[in-house]
Length: 115
Length: 110
Image 1: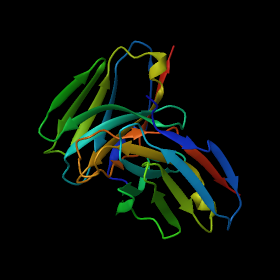
Image 2 (image 1 turned 90 degrees about the vertical axis):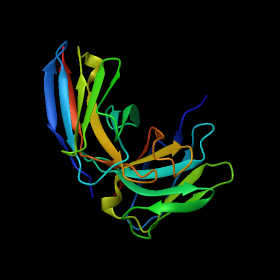
Image 3 (image 1 turned 60 degrees about the vertical axis):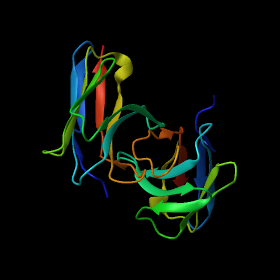
């Protein structure tokens, strides 16, 4: 049973470019959440997708957008990259976005470097 | 913004000793979870404690929760070199939006 997978592992972009990160949830999970983790900090919630709709959003600008596909996989898109977007981007999957007692399972992350 | 703070920010102990990390949070919660992260990689879920629970055990891990003080602690007994990692507490106030602390960097010296 595959866990949460993310691609790519590492990515280097320059300021102003756009990037797309991908996530496949754990088998049986229908909810995908995205987090940004700056170096030395705890992860911060970006947004969450369930049934192909954004259900919750953290304090991130509209440059951050996402999508969820019918097979529950998800993409995170970041436009007009800034140096401050350099971070580890983590995807987490779970079952049922309103079930607050369930565990979220995290992928290995995508390390994004913006030059 | 972060929900709360972990204390200490860094902890270095000898193998075999016990490690205790503390977490404080600001708002009411449904549950609190502890995660481990090795070398900037993905987070591994360790344990979940519900708001109506006071203590929970899992192997060498013991978690306590004091909702009146809005604090939790994670105790790792008989530490091993493989326990070297960063440890984060995370709270959920409502639907599945985890709010993490800054983390404690734990180093186990052989």
